[in-house]
Image (cartoon, rainbow, N blue to C red; front, side, top):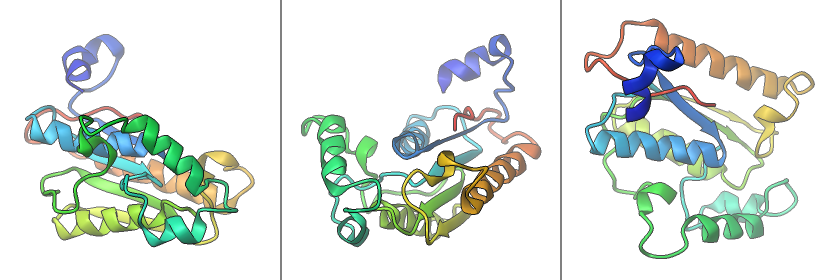
Length: 191
């Protein structure tokens, strides 16, 4: 983030109008980057786009049990991913799951997309609610019949995938269309 703000001109990016986002693990990284950037006083991010992000390394959400088998992403895979991502207690918990009582105020406006048949559904739904409760403007859309990763699967064939891509595009455009942040810097689009 800091590098991009410092070198935006070199790579053809307006470092005053930037957003960050990702799908699945990329959504986790985007959420973590927003938290860390805010904590460290780094560049101001204008928008975060989180598509079915894993945000609770405990894997205790009800959707992990109800959707953890037979819907593309399994509970067993999630356990492997968490073990690889959080190899020990020395790893920052903020990277794997924002603490339940962490302060989310001052984070950038957000788009949170969740899928009804995704084991990670409740994590994304809960995070959207927590952001909203913290005063962060949030657009949250759950696609009830979709599985994890649906947005990037077949947007030309699945109406919900095409809708989520259109929503993502519209939200990022809207966030970046206004005047740059009063703090003068933001973060990069990377979906």
